[in-house]
Length: 247
Image (cartoon, rainbow, N blue to C red; front, side):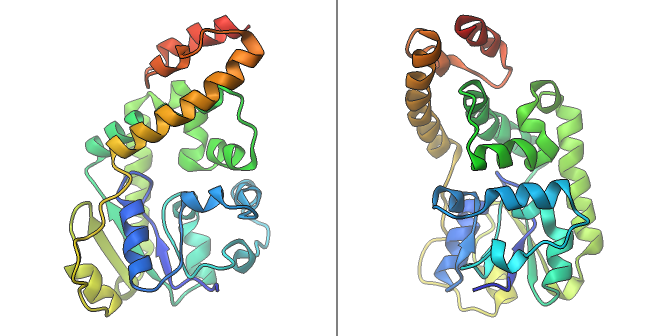
């Protein structure tokens, strides 16, 4: 279905899941991190594109079956995607940087701290460790430096604002709703509430489910007490405890 008609420039935890649902309501088929739960979604090719930006990447193949894309890893490739799809509209989903960092720490970073402990070496896992935030999710000493991570967020936002053509560009603030988006897409306002999905509470449910699966894998390797990993928090203090228990 490529080429892409919509490029989402907003990082994860800026309302990208809700934006995906919204675009799908309008008839788009929208790529999102969730897409990697399906087979043959090629996370390894995103790693290649990140590590070797000079290579000629087959973006049509990577996004086969989609005509819109939001969230990571897409937002890490806004520049080459704009060159590949110059007629695409770019949507920058945005939220206050303090709120964004807090949400990241309580959800995505927390989840992938657990996955890191479980030595997740799936193609999707390798991509998540390498591409979002230049690999900061894999490095507690980097992610937990709030100043550095917030600077990455702000620099990305400023680059997008500076480089995306104004007539193809929409900045959409978290919780904004339908009106300006519908104007931007030349679509009527639906007779329904704007989607609100993948909240922090939703993520916590998923994290707890994933930890149950991870526990079984860790128990098999190190005979640690089932449930120990459930206490992992973003400051990573419990990570050392669990690692020592599995050594």
